[in-house]
Length: 367
Image 1 (spheres, rainbow, N blue to C red):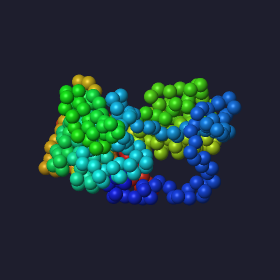
Image 2 (cartoon, helix red, strand yellow):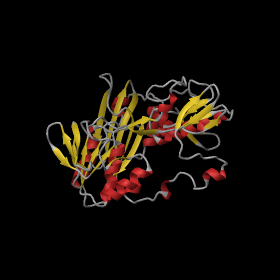
Image 3 (cartoon, rainbow, N blue to C red):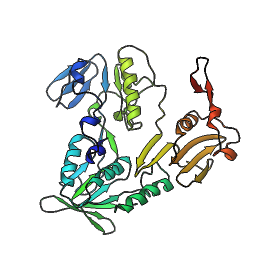
Image 4 (spheres, rainbow, N blue to C red):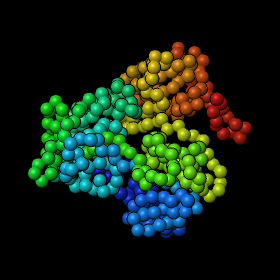
């Protein structure tokens, strides 16, 4: 959502998920401006720098922060921003108005969203430097990524794949002036945007006994390894996407008030995007993990379909252009539905075969 504020296609108010008086209307005491320093699980107390808050049930939903790579001067330079919160966006917008050259480090969804948001500032020369072979490599295959990349190049964007950045070049005032690669090439830069992933905000967990592995470990009721302490969202570290965070928050809330609820659907391997008016959806495995899987692709005039499958089961798909049937396709992949003679009819599967009608007239899946 934040990139829409950069481009001014939406305002801050329009991307809010709740009304401004949400806290008051729901009797929530919001303690702002405090940093949690620790949790005393024996006394059931949350500790900040100057106050303590008692709890019966605790939800940890501290999110994640931008992961800053160990590049010389990256943390020290002025006009180096991440794309993580509203303050970042305001600073990017202000600097973009009087900048000429911008370098984005990272070409995942956040980096590409930022790129598209910056198109509003037509005077900008935008470069994208990244370690991977092609953009959006976690979501797309090489072909669908190239479609977007070529469209972006038509707007003047320069891409630097497989890049090794040595340092951020600063002037005497520590203002950014360039980005230097290990091969000696230097890109001019008035501003650098870092979009190289996130890390969970969990520094305060020391001594709690809450188990952690690239994120807080939770069970199917969103409870941590400590009784009465729950966690949800990016701090869990499973898949840093909004739909899964919402599901976890809802499940945790039910259990915290004594109403047993489990996460029934954690399928999070679905990414949708629409850049340059070209919709694309990636579901499940977009690249085979070993030779036991097969791949079939079909190129249409304005669309592309790729399936990764094995033993009559579809394990992943990348669909670009016509995405009209991805709902059923998601169901087939998520539930590993076996489809007879799949290899010979994968592009001709009639998705009506998987629907049924209940006695009350409602549609449902028949598999």
